[in-house]
Length: 307
Image (cartoon, rainbow, N blue to C red; front, side, top):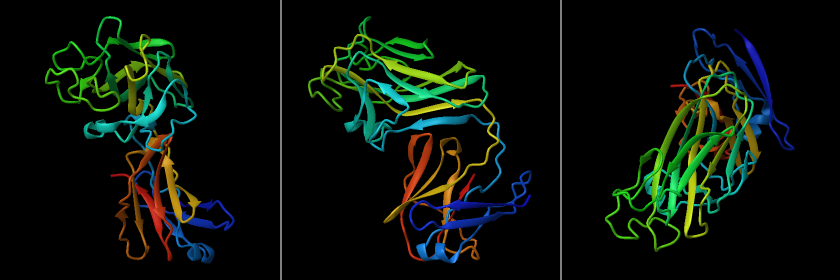
């Protein structure tokens, strides 16, 4: 199959990049090549669009959020602010998470999902301060107003120092009232858990809500969520598109979150065929993955590769 695509770079430069794709979809025979115009060479980089053909029966990632951008995104509503995770960075959390120190709901709305029969939700749960794990201390998760988690949670009374859904990922308490103290109020112990669940689900939209209805709030009791991932059993047959955003003196490369298993690679010369993985952090922000790089002189080529 021979096809071509033109990508218009944003900004006043108005650079147009052309690629010719000679990959055979059924054989997945190779990456696309990028033909750079003189104007593009002056800017010093090239974006490659559709790179390989995809046909997979793996779970499709439809949403991923680690809050490392410092914002929660317009898909979130209700209570909760993006705040520090403090020492939870030692246990799989990033530097930021969505913390809710109220009794109100934090809600995530996802739309436009491909046909599916199952929905999988994964997230890390921070339990801050004096959440006791009494019968009234219930952590609730709903999907489309259907309760999928309703479980006692907290940092006191269980011998391990943590109760709730999923698996404890922080160290057990030594028995001291403030051990381990991982952030926010220094008087109380904290813990975190990794949560995974799969439910039947078929609609193209889902509203996922997180709530501690009886929270005393503030620095006394709160919870937070991080590394939120939503997957379905939809079969992804799309090809990911790699786009480029000009933000001088940097460039930002972006591709859809459902292509999270692709690796961003680059080379300075197409003739050498020496492609190397881009050694920069990949940021997850809702439906988009991105990498920020400094703009360079000379030619630079990018492609997404699936291992």
